[in-house]
Length: 312
Ligand SMILES: Cc1cc2nc3c(=O)[nH]c(=O)nc-3n(C[C@H](O)[C@H](O)[C@H](O)COP(=O)(O)OP(=O)(O)OC[C@H]3O[C@@H](n4cnc5c(N)ncnc54)[C@H](O)[C@@H]3O)c2cc1C
Image (cartoon, rainbow, N blue to C red; front, side, top):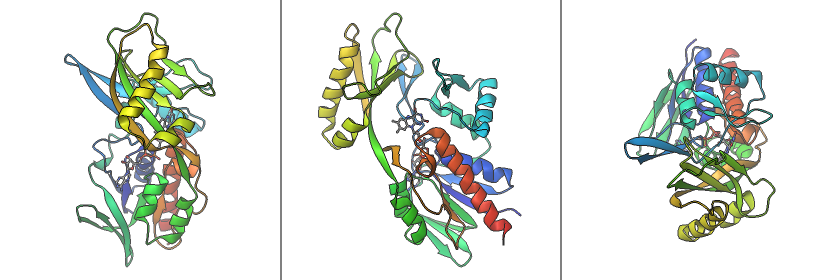
């Protein structure tokens, strides 16, 4: 039994859905509105001379609680595209050269189309059609898994009120990420600074692919109440906090990125698959606020789709 499934979103949830469907022999295509795969596991390139360096401005590391995700990490370490990050208990991991590299390796045999923004999912007879913002129709899918963050996902699912009820219950914190560089790497510089529960506006700051390129994140309290403000204002206030820490070094602002839906505040409660049609939702919003949770929710959505066809 082979089925044709469309997956919306090439973040870790979309990728784990597609991998799990593949293990069942189902074909899937992943579409995403962005230029690159990865969603919030994101990197930004900068060149010093000819050599590229990478900011890690979204997820900073991932952890593994389940055996399944531990196995994925084990394979990545063995093949040199995942490395342990710092010296933490429980252990933390990163992509070796970039965070996205981890996903690129995981998804080598999957089918992607980037720069496709979906606007609507519509059931027609026994099939599902999907519409994009260029009015192209993606027709005759046996099933769909939709993985954008809950508020964006909600907008696609007008024809599926029970899934919208589920998505309504979720919410996110915002995060402001600021990327900066060092002219000269300070001697004995740490790889990261954790400001958890410390006074100030920062939550975390860490080097990217090398010690010249850094990203700082503002904490939930500051981000949620300031993200909509003027970007120059935000830049000034955040850079001045960072400069207090690196007062001995010359640092240069690179760019600012606002993650409106950064980490899950409240998880979604309710069904993950429509009662009538093989349309399922997946993403961190179903399981928790991290990479592994999003991975797990993608696998669960794929299982729900598979089970639906098994029971027919
Ligand atoms: C700043 C920041 C720091 C974080 N730090 C950590 C950390 O250190 N450790 C950790 O484990 N987790 C961290 N997280 C959380 C982690 O990144 C997420 O939980 C996880 O990546 C979510 O994956 P996802 O696949 O559910 O969603 P996403 O990665 O958001 O993927 C959804 C995809 O859907 C696409 N999309 C949206 N709308 C449409 C549409 N209409 N049509 C087509 N495509 C669409 C988006 O472009 C996106 O690629 C962090 C997140 C942020 C933002």
